[in-house]
Image 1 (cartoon, rainbow, N blue to C red):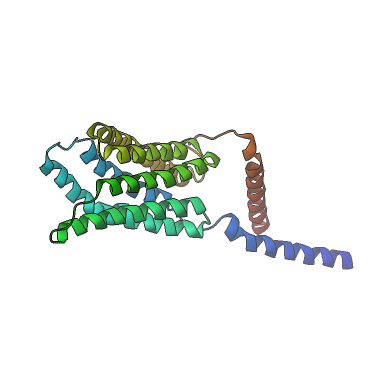
Image 2: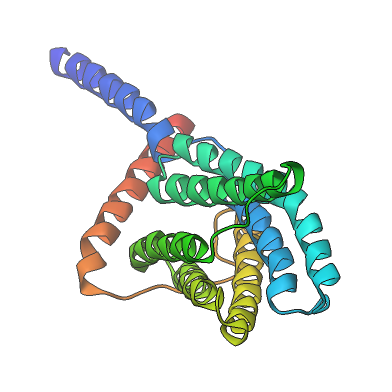
Length: 247
């Protein structure tokens, strides 16, 4: 009888421990990635209308694209990505938090520069060398993020590869119109991949309920084995919590 009582107490402690771990294993918060990806993709595509001259190659046409992009840079590309980045905090996603907050702040900063140029009397023109440096530094931290994506999936890896390439080309294109135009097309491909990834995340999570209806591609590196084993352990613990609750 004493042994049965001890067993019941032990099981009760185990249930409490598993329940306390459940919020960390499966956080009940929405995935903010599609929100941030759509905001990023749309604003990026809008800006490339200027670099590719698809919307026209005259100064008036380019200024018109800048005027449209300005509002989207502040809110659709900037604020929305900051919101998505902060949403990743609850999910304990360091990569998503870093990426969305960085690019959200980038777009808001870009919009602020444009606003100052429009509103300030006799505002000095942006220094081309400083602009090149800024774009190059953005490309550098994008490359850092791209390296991290090798532990994720092929789609996001391709997204950050194209984004880093776009930034490097835009930096070089400040003084070269041909390179700038090529950078614009790279940017359009980047925006398309962002839209594709956002759609995949939404469809897989809503229609697939966590199952990959749209495959994102996986890397098969030996040094990822440990991470995969840890993931299996987490999934097993989550299943244990569900089984105990159903019992």
